[in-house]
Length: 164
Image (cartoon, rainbow, N blue to C red):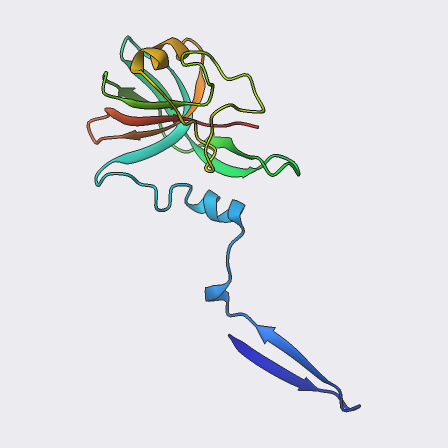
């Protein structure tokens, strides 16, 4: 950081602080738009995708990757995710009984009813631990999710997203 002292003809001095662009911080919204999962990649070799999941068989779902941005809901201070435009081709991801599925609603297998959400963390993900059978039940409709999956297109973690 560098300070610049400017003098005026009247003898007054004004001090300005110049912040180099490299140290300027992005706003929370812009930083998450650039990399919504920075520091959250999970296990080595796993990939992460955000989008709407729909059933594609007994133990699989289809998801079209979308750009995800986390932001505030109005002036409430509550965080929520916005799923934007498509960011890739649709994927069909399988899941097993060992899937780590976290839901927003307090009752597993029921769709969320909106604000105030019962079980969400500071990152606006669901925290209620549910089974893969509950995920199968929810996939009758489309649900907003963050999916961590392996290179073989098998889901490891599925987190329901809090939406505005």
